[in-house]
Length: 422
Ligand code: SAJ
Image 1 (cartoon, rainbow, N blue to C red):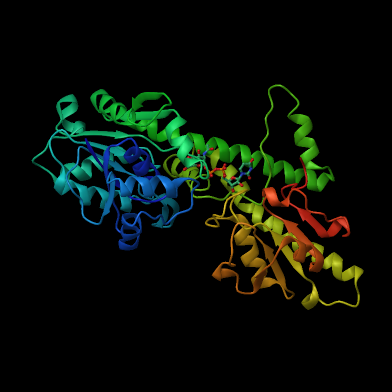
Image 2 (cartoon, rainbow, N blue to C red):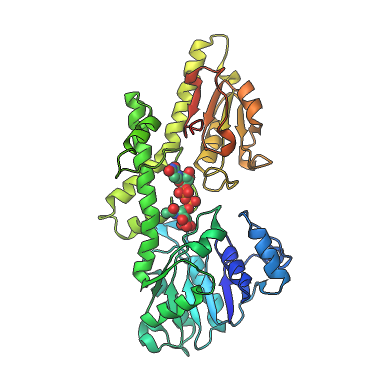
């Protein structure tokens, strides 16, 4: 059978490549000509361990090919972005425009017997909406929302749940939630995931599958917010939050996550809003968690500013222009090079703009400082420790474990992630 992957990004490309590695023909459809060219050369445009090898092999063996134009296939997997937008004064409203354009691009080539799967993280109801868009474009075919089990086309939602940095392993090993618009749709989707998934495939309705994905990421967001809130409380009460969490976690039924500079990445800071946006009256805790996590960067900035104030008090010979601040870590989480939606980068950008003195940044996973940080210099850990008056550790990268700040007064080391702990 032939499979068409719509959207060749962080989820679509690895999924396409893994399916192709099972000797199944895959065509990847994308709107970006550079992405299509890169993949057809056997290269990749994103960073993910082992992905380059798998894509290279799949393309050179002829199982994977990228294109700008939709072609007929047996199954279509849609993995396009679902950001949010502001509409009619409402913020954080899910934006389904990319799903809509994916639907419009594949509709003309759909044939009786085809399967369409939505993998993008979506608000509840998006799969039904996708089916409506397809049905509108193809009145000659029948669809499950009207024609039930006997429809020409089968449609299901099967949310991706892989962890960036571990995508290839998790694509195969994770269990999958499969929500068909009808039981026959779920069954058809299960057969497709059988090609490469070793985890269990569990079937449910499309709406439940949509909500399951949003629930998973909201669960994590709420738990991180709990840890972040504890860090604010402990700061006021002069208690070491890391010691506190270690102690509380000795309880057999307590498992608190780690505080940090805020929540980054492309999913956890977005998905909970899809629930809040639909059910604002009920989703009070989920909204509050988002607000707590989103407020953490400002708290870190305030900490840095008050450390600068303290430093100037202690050093009457210095002015704010010659206080040097160093930030350790720009990525959105440890041991990756991904700076998108990173709270640490946002903090660095704000400080670069507002500080009178100089800003150094240390990020062992990148080679050039991002363009948004023109006023900062990318330096090594050693340089930063030697030259900075105030050090702020923002990401618990492996490389930061052994950092030795012992020559510096403790009040000028702001270790947001307790990097030195085992
Ligand atoms: N973070 C903390 N404290 C913690 C754990 C994480 O502050 O204890 C922060 C990280 O530093 C980062 C953010 O949270 O800024 C998110 O990181 P993450 O590792 O929790 O998650 P992502 O965004 O890389 O991937 C998540 C995963 N979801 C869950 O673990 C429930 C992944 O399985 C999903 O597939 C992915 O979102 C997605 O695509 O939705």
